[in-house]
Amino acid sequence: MRPMRVLRLVVHARSRQPVLVLGEVDGDRCLPVFLRAQQAEVISVGKREGADQETAVSQDVLLPVVEALGSRLVGAEITALVDGVYSAELVLDNDLRVSVRPSDALAVAVREDLPIGVADEILDDVGQDVSEVFPVEGSAAPPEEQVQEFRDFLDDVSPDDFRR
Image 1: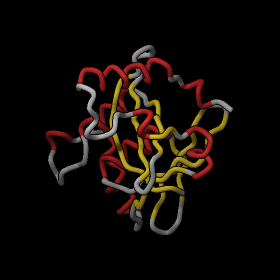
Image 2: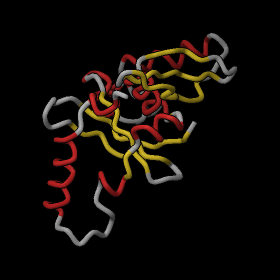
Image 3: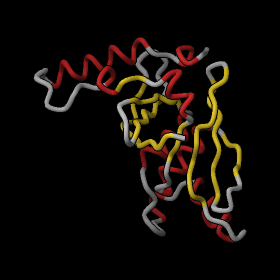
Image 4: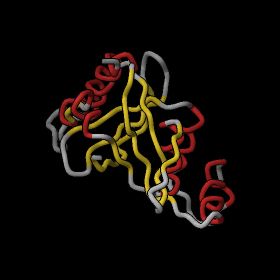
């Protein structure tokens, strides 16, 4: 399992679907994950800040339930890619794993500030070099050109790109 971090939340130009771009913590590859709108909204709200009811979302009920059952959430993992569809699990401290939709796993991970992992095989199969997707920091290209390059990339990627 490769540790990942959130790079960006963007909207795919053609499909208008939200895409969460994950990047390796200790590497140069990234992985776009198409999301459902509701989970993208949760991710855009960001990390849960204590008992702040102003930004409470439905995923916030999960942590107290897990804790009431004597466990603790310790991570979210994208475990497989079959026919262009990711599989994911929430991982609890007793190594119990709960299979969930990838968008739900990522929404919970972002809200609870949990580590996110992606199976090495997935990155080997469909991971993209970050420098090909995002301009290198300090690039001489003007910001408008950098944005256009990223839009061009998004125009050419689709969920079908992740089918074997």
